[in-house]
Length: 137
Length: 137
Length: 137
Image (cartoon, rainbow over all chains, first blue to last red; front, top):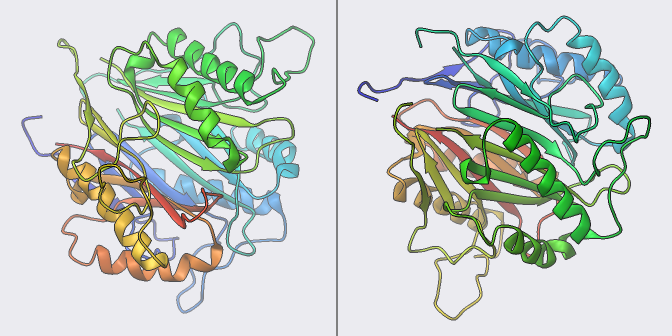
């Protein structure tokens, strides 16, 4: 650690501004952390962000795409991700989540990331939130 | 970072296959991430995984053993763990969890990991889920 | 990695002893992990820890100060933090949390950390819990 590591914010053009002083993604050294993403569609100037709909499938795919945008903006990909944290609102969604997840990652070349899935409360209208930790290099 | 870091999946022989495209553990560089583990007993071919029972004690100990299997399969130990995330389903379980946790870690040689404990929903029959982050070297 | 990395526990003087065998913070290599902090006021010998009150504002600020104590005791600062995990108990608290968060971080010099906010159960009296991951150097 002879030179100071730079801390960089990652802000994909498709993303709405975070609702508070946090970054959609941060890179420092070989660590890239993606903030909790939800199923908001691409940002539209002057419009409040809203989740795509109507169901778990659409929201999950959009959420995964939003995580991916942060990874790519940070020069990374799903291949670099070591941990995915999934927050669902309904235990009844687990089987469908896994189907969607497997489809999404069908072409993954590296071994898949570790994952934890838990069931929490989320703001009204949101069915899923996902964050991810990547190790680069 | 002159050479490409390898990303390795960790799959203990005792573990059932993950229910989706994720790994029980992943190692990249000096980071080892253990996926959310629950109190499933050792895998039995042809049988669906089921939690050991009947209570918090048995599930917690089995969950900790499952985390440990991943650590050991990845060439690590609890001494390397910097963070343990515990997901309980009942705030009334906190005191008993701590008793069990202290017993389990009675012989830890290094300083204990940091920990966060929160109360969430889990699939029916599960009382606890635990994941862990280790820094190797 | 020719020399063994040291794992160090971080225990601010202001903190009550953890209720189990875990550390308020742990540093290993260039990773510093802060355990889940809550809004307990500074430790008073012989007294059980209790959250400051009465509202979200007081608890949130105290929780952030407690995270900061661990960071500082570990030779780090908010500038080094790459991820903040916030556990609230009430989705109705999101807007106020963000106000408080923005005030607290008004003078941050580096880009802000990534963040995930979810809604969980916490022990009685606690409205918020926060942990943080820092990358040093």
